[in-house]
Image (cartoon, rainbow, N blue to C red; front, side, top):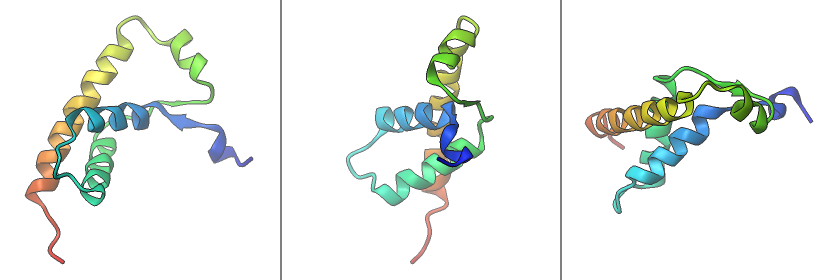
Length: 88
C-alpha cells in the first residue's frame, strides 16, 4: 500500500454527499465531476487516516458546519460550471 492510499480527505465524502443531495435528472457525469472539482478547490483540506479519528477528535458542531460548507460549495460550483460550459 502506498502512503497516498493510507489517507483520505473528509471533504471528498461530504462533497459527494452534497452532490447526491442536489443532483438533477439532466446532470451528466462530466458535469458532476467538474462540480466536484470546483467545490473541493473552494474548501480546505481535512485529511485523516482512520475515520474513527475524525469522529473522536472533532469538536461538537464541526461536522455539521463542514456539511453546510460542503453543500454551499456544491451549490456555488454548480452555478459556476453551468455558467462556464465547455464548447466541444
